[in-house]
Image (cartoon, rainbow, N blue to C red):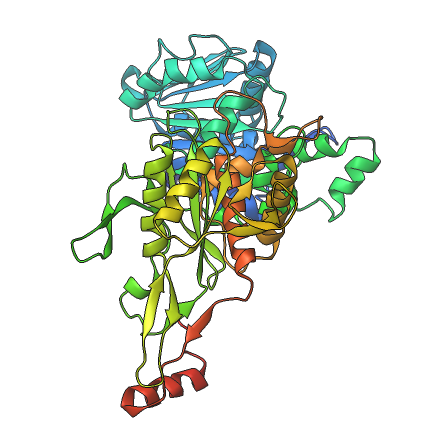
Length: 546
């Protein structure tokens, strides 16, 4: 090429790089091959390519990753790309200590030193922890890599900030609180990058930020990078790590396969891999509460502060309902608290045809008597139907969903109220106190044996269910539900950790198991035009759509 052609080519390449982070990576970025002590051209893996847009566009991003997945290299390249492009851009990295801060910036230098000079603004400053570019009109863009301090980026107004290996940073919570106001003012970006090392001093904060993003309680976009994202790893990679001397728990922490596995308790969740297929399907649902009108009908009132979350409404209230009623379709289970603001009362509705939890009622401010009223409304909204046809006419009757309540102190009060309200309940026959006969026992006993049975049946259902778990809170609580050293089942110790959702879900599954035979549609008599149409639909296999 002659000089004019060279200049034209360089201008066109600069334009392409300015417009596309992916093009910059594909065409110009080299990374370090530590095994062979050399520079190699970056070849993006499929899993890496999927996350590039989020890495550039998302203002709040949290990446939970396996080791050696290239996440830090991608973030380093992104910071260099931004500061080449944008005058006055300030990129900050907060690392656990000074050595790691220097190591992070060295990755940027490794990429920088292999770029063509015409792609770069002039370098103004290059030190162990600061890189500055000089742009036109005296403007400067800066990349600064800092060790961990309580102030974080408090005195700065960064355009983008990365917390690198946040699980190992004991000050990350304070740093985020100190730094975020500046980021928000600059309309900038926060990226959290971490492994899932459970004994790391910053793991609690990292896990909470990640799980809160699952629950819709913050605005972070979450990204999970599993061990198999590395295309060079064989299928038995994790077993090879165990065979080489790593403990199974260490392998899971450093090389997780699923979100649930990465987030589970340090000693391993009781539910293990039964949650694997569900973590990608969580969704907030619609919030509100139920109210009975003057005609006795139950209506859903939408309210973002309401105690009820609905993922699927009852089939018979949906537009396009086919007119078919179902027996034994819904079950209901509930853990009950005192309603004093500490632990929660939690109830789920299971749609046995969908084979999924479709609604959840949860509050820590409703006492046991009022909770019974809420359960009654829920059992009537997600009702079952009974065939009351008499041979002369077709007739169905609404009956409450079967309800299984854990009989703790507060649960006893709720059970008694439900009896008064004539709600169908889980009942067992047990020997009476004098041993001369059997007596009815309502609800589920609050014992360790009972908790084992609940948890075990719930685990089996998670593995075999046709539907998905939509509730991120339930998945979160299951991931820290463990068998303690003394044999007790319950949540991992720590402030703000609960297992109310797990118990409520387990009770709902017990109600479903108690009902036995699966849902059955109530067939109207085949008479007249409508009957003939329904018969055709049944024969065609579309009878039970709902």
